[in-house]
Image (cartoon, rainbow, N blue to C red; front, side, top):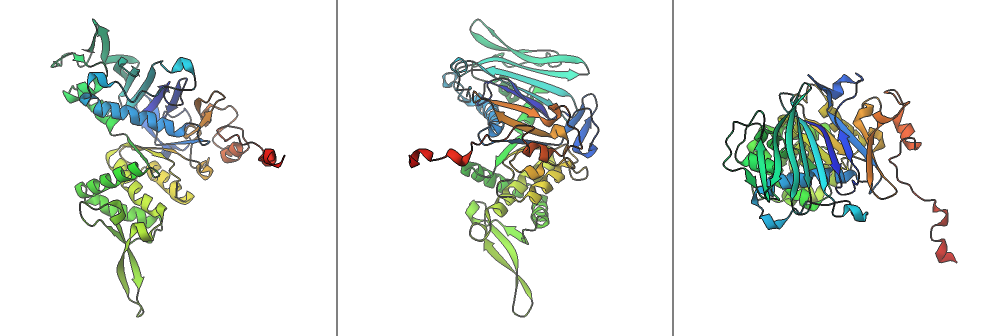
Length: 410
């Protein structure tokens, strides 16, 4: 489970930005969080609002780039650099400054792990992994630079593990290397980070990746098919089944099954090509549904960018309820989404600490804050009304239309 994520000098995040799934002290809506032994509450759902171009997607991009560095880092040459380095580019003094990332995770045993990374376009400058037990922070490994060499030092808890080598390439994550040699504890944390899922429904390459992943999951987990059918049925799509015509089938080949009423009153099943006869939203539900089912089944964290794209408000509300259901979400899965759908901003279903606002500052950088940060707001406040009244920010600053195109009239 994600506890919190911190970025600095990455994409539109010039200053430090923290997104947290840590619940505040209030016990309101106790079905919306997991109770964690020493760390209070960890939220099941987080919802991020903000104007277009405010930086919402950059939160997911930053995490995705870290994942790529983690997964691919062992296979790059030392002179390949770090292509994931994307500093804030609207200030000259940040163009060559290092980027930093910090992720805190709760594992299945509810131990809090903290991973820190600082890097530039050429090398990893800082890296460490710690765990917190009660008030005691224990370092598991850290990276040091000595005699022009990047070295990994194993610390308390795993210091008795023998590494085949202690040096790593300057652009190689120590976390990647330690996972590759099956270092105790560290390998599990690296896998947990790799299992964070990030999806959207508007990018063509993402759609292809989700389609390939859907075919793979439906083949490996036979019960996913039945769950996916239930998911689609409960959302009033009218679908009675689906067919994937072969392992090599493309997304355009997906078939949905419907009931057809004959002249004699009998009902028969008919096949419709999904790309020809079904709406974009229904097709997206198929791909998104598989990732939702996987997350709930495995206890993964799922990020969805623009969840409301092509979907009705009632459907997005239903998906949020799935993750907040104690009966359905038994394995501590999390859903984190960006959206423009203010109908989801409902004090009856979401806590203040579950609603976040991304706002673009005057210098073009992004800031992020939670509704729980505001004084005078409680769990009974009509937050949708307050938001639309511009009391929280996180809205586009649109100029008056009165003077638009006036220069063409002169």
